[in-house]
Length: 314
Ligand code: HEC
Ligand code: HEC
Ligand code: HEC
Ligand code: HEC
Ligand code: HEC
Ligand code: HEC
Image (tube, rainbow, N blue to C red; front, side, top):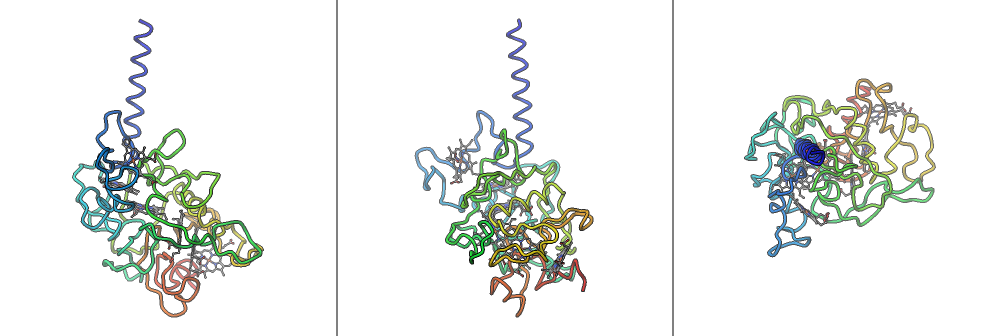
């Protein structure tokens, strides 16, 4: 009898665990049951066409659902838009069809970059690499008295940042956007786990609002700042760093990138105050274009240096 009771308790606990996980990660990412069918959406046992038994090579696995023509997900990250094409019923709904995504987009984005309160789909002017080709991880590495721009020749794709299997937190808990505690491509010892969003919202608050005013809950805002800085090490600063010499040959005096609400109400200051994560359609002219990365918009939320004016209003 005692044994029977124990079994019942165990079954009940397992059910709770499975249900909890299923609510947290989304789509085919995590929340797998012992008899899940989800593996088959990305893996083939005998007939795979990509390494690691995948149904395709590299990022193409992801864009099969998250791309322009995929029907397996609502988040079209190439056009940076939330659609209504995923056939599962969401409750509560996770976005408004036709609105821009929080991360901008890789090919095009719906962002009000000129602050005129109208938004259309505009081709991006900068984005993180997502195809697996290589670039420099700007500022990766410790403070250096000799010039060190970062880690060159680093391949970057969706999988460096996201874990397709979800449950990437300690004890297999969900993290925000299935982001890896340790993004791959750089050498890391510590882990940054961003707590998951309680109710998923993928689209921006309004297509006719100022994209710069998109805000994040404190946990995600601070979390993302620490997370981005695992790759862009020397971009992480505290208040006062604008007038304190860091001793670095390149990143000598640096704008605050991690300030609490006590410095800047109501949400503090974070990487996502100025940047989007995937790609931006902001326009850069003359001087703004030559500042650091000639020819692109450095994932900024507003045209030229509109982000500066949005806070300082000089
Ligand atoms: C959304 C697509 C997707 C789904 C669903 C998925 N996988 Fe994967 N899996 C991948 C990708 C992509 C990789 C390669 C990851 C990398 O190279 O960083 C991978 C790698 C693996 C690996 C090898 C290395 C590792 O990361 O552990 C195993 C084992 C694996 N998957 C098993 C499974 C099983 C079992 C399931 C179902 C419970 C599953 N996968 C569901 C995309 C998926
Ligand atoms: C079989 C279709 C399918 C494939 C393949 C797929 N996804 Fe997804 N993914 C979804 C669905 C469905 C969601 C839920 C949101 C939505 O409808 O867009 C989702 C959600 C996500 C999210 C948000 C998770 C969260 O916690 O809010 C991320 C990030 C993501 N996918 C990345 C990837 C990456 C990276 C790959 C490639 C390894 C991939 N997906 C492959 C269907 C897919
Ligand atoms: C450099 C790291 C990085 C790469 C590369 C990357 N992502 Fe993301 N992704 C993020 C971050 C960070 C967020 C959260 C953005 C936010 O909330 O502002 C995110 C958000 C998302 C979302 C939620 C919708 C949104 O726009 O907020 C999906 C879906 C997604 N990523 C899929 C992908 C897919 C598919 C790829 C490859 C084609 C990819 N990501 C490549 C870091 C990355
Ligand atoms: C106050 C606005 C602001 C904040 C906050 C901010 N950035 Fe930037 N970032 C910029 C601007 C503007 C540029 C374009 C180059 C310039 O003017 O220095 C840029 C450029 C970059 C670049 C391109 C290489 C370089 O250094 O010029 C990287 C990488 C970067 N930022 C990462 C980050 C990370 C990571 C965070 C958070 C730790 C962050 N940024 C926070 C405004 C900001
Ligand atoms: C896995 C490591 C990695 C992570 C995590 C990462 N980045 Fe990057 N980032 C790169 C690499 C590599 C490049 C250079 C190649 C490219 O443009 O993708 C880059 C380039 C950039 C640039 C310059 C883009 C341009 O115009 O060329 C900015 C700005 C930037 N990252 C900001 C961020 C922010 C903000 C986050 C967090 C949301 C972040 N990064 C997270 C690896 C990373
Ligand atoms: C999200 C709001 C925000 C944005 C956007 C922003 N700033 Fe700031 N800025 C601040 C805050 C807060 C401080 C005070 C920092 C401190 O306490 O060290 C500051 C400080 C400064 C300082 C003084 C630094 C010092 O050492 O005294 C300068 C100069 C400056 N910002 C220029 C800029 C420029 C140029 C841009 C555009 C790339 C910009 N800011 C974008 C909020 C912002």
